[in-house]
Length: 266
Image 1: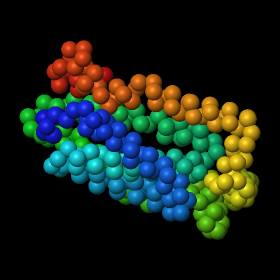
Image 2 (image 1 turned 90 degrees about the vertical axis):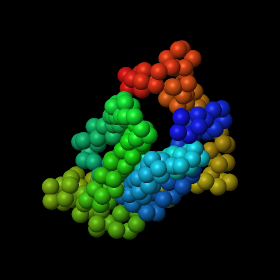
Image 3 (image 1 turned 180 degrees about the vertical axis):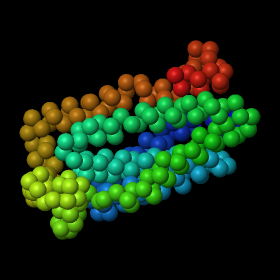
Image 4 (image 1 turned 30 degrees about the vertical axis):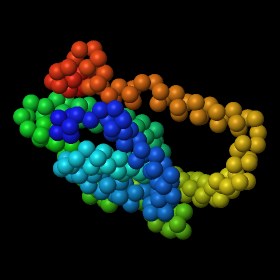
């Protein structure tokens, strides 16, 4: 706050929303990119964006530059979140798919806790590195992912969708069949090919597709429930508190920065 001139009002508000702004852009592009480039490539691209923007934030010389770094970082993080879980689900053995999917979705809390307590640890540094160290440490896990993702096989489903069925089959044989083309591998290949065939008849995002979605009362009801659920979850207050915790604590006379970082960690 001191380094960037204690921004207030709309400037501070836009900073709080900047990662989400980047995420909104990602929602319109990542679906196409993950199908075009593959799951691994999207994870790598997202990691590279997060790494570069973390460096940009660390050495930002103005508040607009700091905001821009967070906004583009939000874009990179969100396209990672499209490629990553899809790759996990499509590679996981059927017996461990549920556990791995759950572990992926809950691992964010490990990062949140680590980030909060790293900030508590660096707070006492008597220089701008007290906030720059947490910023630059954002490169560690994306850097690991950027290099290690290429040691991970590509999604068999994506390979089959691109006509590389033999490659998809070999991956399933190696990781799910212990090197044997067994019944499980045969079943998975049949499911993949059947689902790809089914995708060809899916509703498209055009006039006829929208008409089929909005043309019945039941579909409108389902769409309304989905919309309300998404909006209501964001209006619960957790996003507001996470973005504006220091300002909230000011209102209840917790004005010490040391207290604020400690409360954020707890």
